Amino acid sequence: MTTPFPGATSVSILDVYSWEAPDGLPGGSPHLHTACSEGYVVVGGAGRVQTLDASGFRETPLRDGSVVWFGPGVIHRLVNEGGLRIVVVMQNNGLPEAGDAVLTFPDVHLASAEDYARVAALTPGDEAASARRRQALAVEGFTRLRSDVEREGPAALEAFYAAAADLVSPKVPRWRDTWHAGPAASVAATARQLDALEAGAPSHLAEGRVSAQDGTPRFGMCGRLSTYTFDPTG
Image (tube, rainbow, N blue to C red; front, side, top):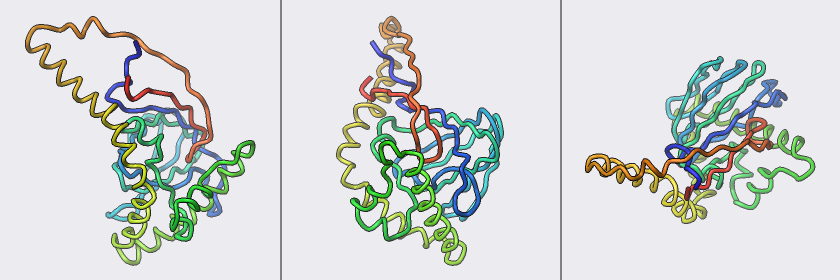
C-alpha cells in the first residue's frame, strides 16, 4: 500500500539555473500556472522571485528559510544570486505535471499549440542548450509584458491570460479525471476519517503506512529539478 503524499500535493527539489538570460540575470524561465498554487521553501543560497500580476511587478527576496507562495495567474521568474535551492510544493498533484504551466513566450509562439509545444520542448541529448533557448524566449516575452503592465496597467495581461487558457483548454477533461482521483479524493477521505473519529470507529488508523522514494533529476523550467512520482490515485 502506498500512502498518497499529504493533501494530494506534489513536492520537488529545485536547484535554480545559474546561467544568464539575455538580460544578464541568471535563473529560470518565467511562466504562470493556470490552475495550481505554488509554494517555495528556500533551503539554500540566495536570490529573488520576480512576479507580475494584476497588482503590477514585484521582487521578493529569497533567503535560506524564506517561504513564498502565490496563486494561479501570477507570472513568476526566479533569479539566482548564488546557490539558490528551493523545495517546491505544488497544489493539485498531477496537474502541474500534465501541463498546467504556460511560459511567457512572445505572442508569435502562443498563437498555436503546435508552435508553443515546439519551442517549449527539450531536445533529447541537448536538454541544457534547448532549456537555455526556452529561457531566452520566455524572458523576452516577460520583459515585454512587464513593460506593457507598467504602461497600461493590469489590462495588459488579458491577452496573455487568454492565450494561456486557449493552450491548456484541450487538456482540461483529462485534468478533471486527475483532480477527481487525487485532490478531490483526498478531501473526501479526510471527511470520512473525521466521521469515523466522531463515531468512535477509527479503523483507518490501522491502514497507515510509511512510503519513501528518491528524486529523479531533470531539466525543469527554472533549474535542475529533482522530481518525485506520486500516483494521484494513491
